[in-house]
Structures are given as structure tokens and as C-alpha cells.
Length: 347
Image (cartoon, rainbow, N blue to C red; front, side):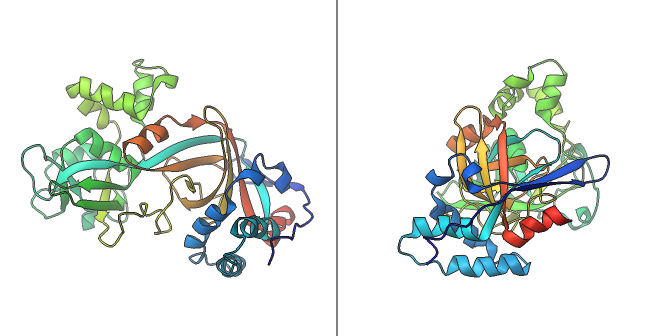
């Protein structure tokens, strides 16, 4: 049992160069410095940690994973909190950029296996020639006919705008007319950098930055069909999908570790700074403050920086609304194995 064990916590700080003039700092803080730490459901976080820690390669992570899986079922909440406090140290990693939390979700679309009626917009698998580098732009893929007649369609959906946002999210569910569901996950991309159409609307003077959200963008595109189609082509990046045939309906989509992620317990991070699979303490400020232990189980093309994170909100319209409204400051603290944490201070 480790429930009664509470280690003495030390603190330290080190600056290390990160190239290109960037300065990265690592600061070890105490668990008592984590706002709201004692109030969280540590057992829920531990369960999510166990779901992916077995896929971490380094020996210290593997050893901690074995301990986590052996936790006694009785008094689980105390055991879980003690596990994190005994074997980890909280590390604040900074790269000079302000912290920023956003949200993402698993969208649900209406579609069919064959085209017809409203189902006119194909969800494509990745063609073999698109692998390994930069391929055609979004406009070329959609307008050249290069994808047609090759059997690359997974399904057809009824809304081109929702399909565009499905590509941004990277995974989703397509509801079939017979009541069934097709799950799709990220299958690759065309190699072009993502360009934000929200930022483009601001640049054109159509909206101010604080007004832009996913729903605002969708509404504008639908109100302005011709200009809306042109706006979507402003983003040259195009995402392809793969069908997820063996993923149970009650599980979340697959994250970057190829395991299901969990609503409000999984977070997308920049793996340059935060190891995938690591516990992450989130202190999100702004409207609806959040203090919660999450697990870094995903990445994203727009998630760049030591204090940049994307919180997974779940599946469907409600999750999408909550995720789309999130753009808040705060602080992110990574829980590192003890020796690994102090090694950061001695490098």
C-alpha cells in the first residue's frame, strides 16, 4: 500500500537552450503548488494513464506502468493520489510563449456507403502516391478529378462544411441511414501546412479575433456559398481517413498513441516538450475554470509549444460546442518520473 506515503517535495529550476534563440525552462514544483490537486479524481486519471502507459518505451515509464496496474482496488482514490505523489515530480516547462488551452471533439456526421440524394461529399482514404511528402493541394484534390473512380471512398456525407471540420478534428462518426455507424480516424495528409480559415476571416476584416469560433465560421460559409467554398480552399491541407472497424461504440476515438482517448481526461500536446503518455496537470483559467489531471495521449498540427494543449471534450454536438468556445490561458504542469525530472535540471 502506498496510500499513506507522502514524499518530501523539492523544487528547482534550469534554463536550457532550444535553438533558434528560444529559451526553455524546467521548474520542479511541489504538489501543494498545484491549484486544486487534492480535489481531483486521481483514480479516474490513473485509469486513463494505465490505458496507454504500456506503450511507452523507456524503462522508467514501463516500471511505473507496472506499479500503476498493480494498485489495490480498495481505497482506490487515496492509492491513486499517492501513486502520483510518490513516483512523480511536477515539472513546469516554459518556452517563452503564453499558455493557451483549446478544445477538440469527435464530430458526428450523416452519411451513406453509396452516393445519392444529399450524400454527395466523399470521405477519402489516402491514395498511395500521396504518402511520403507534399502532394496536391486541397483545391487540386477536390477539383482535378484525381480521386474519382479509384474506390477510395469510405462513405459519402451530406455536408461539405462538416466534412471540412471533420478533417480538422481528425476523427469522427458517420451515422448511416440504417442506424449504423462508421468510425473513421486519421489516415494521413497531403503534406501541406494547415492554414486557419478563422484567421483569414479576421485578416479580411469580416470578424474580430474574439468573435471567431467553429460555429461562426460554419454559419458564415453557409450564408455565403460561393465565397465560402473559396474560403475553405484557403487551407491547402487535406486530411485522409481510415475506417476503424474494431473500435467499440462506447470508446473514444484513437489518439496519437493509437489508443482510445477519454473525454476531459485526454489532452493533445506538443511531444517536443511533453512525452506522449505522461500525466499532465491542467490549470485552465477563463470562463469555466478547470483543474484536472489529464494524460497526454494525442497531438495536433496546431498544438505547438511547451504550454500549448488541446483538451478532448468527447463526441457529438454538445462536446463540439464546448470545445469550440475554448481559448483560455492558464498553466500546464507535466508529471515526470522522479529521476527524469531531476535529470532535466542537470543537463
